[in-house]
Length: 114
Length: 114
Image 1 (cartoon, rainbow over the protein chains, first blue to last red):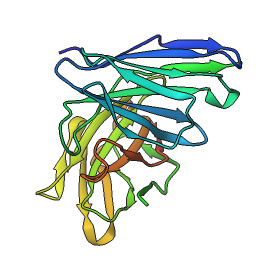
Image 2: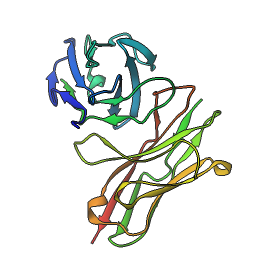
Image 3: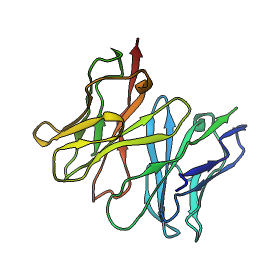
Image 4: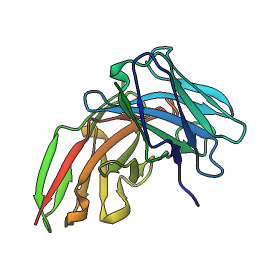
């Protein structure tokens, strides 16, 4: 079974621009979560989508948004990029449903903001 | 508030030696606990997880971890380290109250010397 895929793997943007990252979950998984990883803050939860609905949200500003499609693929958008948004963005998928489930991570998208 | 502490930022061990990585959590509810490993430039790979039952859990690559509720700990162990184990290790906690919102520790970087 194919794993979680993320595209693109690397991105370079300038301040003020916006960016969209994509995540395709493992086949049959309905939950997609997004995390930001930085050397200073570590791994921080952004949000989770399940059945096209945001089910959980972390403490990030509204510039960070996401959505999920009917095939469970998810996109994350960051508007008005700031230097501090430079990070590795990781997507994780799980079967979904109630409660906590094991999450399987993709390789990440490395975003650099200049 | 939920939190995870990995007291050791960096550990160096000789190949063939035993390994123990520490993880302490602060959580009000019954925790679900995970260990993930991250190689440079890669996403997170699940090593093992604890949801309930036997407090000693076995994972992949010869790793095991023991859940000790009285100490709020979930330490990762391996009896004999291989050079390929060099990576960053993350402990994570979640609960039925938080669904798939995982809280991660800051990670422990493992160096293996020949």
